[in-house]
Image (cartoon, rainbow, N blue to C red; front, side, top):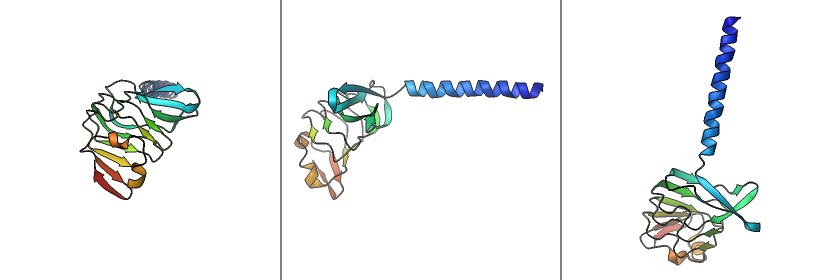
Length: 159
């Protein structure tokens, strides 16, 4: 009987510790969200200390993630990849300024890239989920700096 009681106590302690770990992981989200009327949410990094691969969700609180806020990932030198969701429409000013990211995945749904979105960054590759022709239809695609390699579904090219 005592062994069973001891096992139950240990199991409860383990469950509480596990729950605390899960809750602390949730509270350390890497992204912040700004609601902008009927558009839905615009998103960016919580701070410049984020690292690794960042996957931006397609929706938040039941509304679409519409774009990246101004300065979304500015000076986030430790991210290796940013994956933007299908449905995202716009990439804001200085979104990737000073970013050390190697890769940004841009969906076909993006219709606007601000002229300073990719200013002064170490990024060398954009993976675009559309064709070369679709890439040229994005408002502002010409503002992406040279020496960035763009990979489309029908080929690749250097800007």
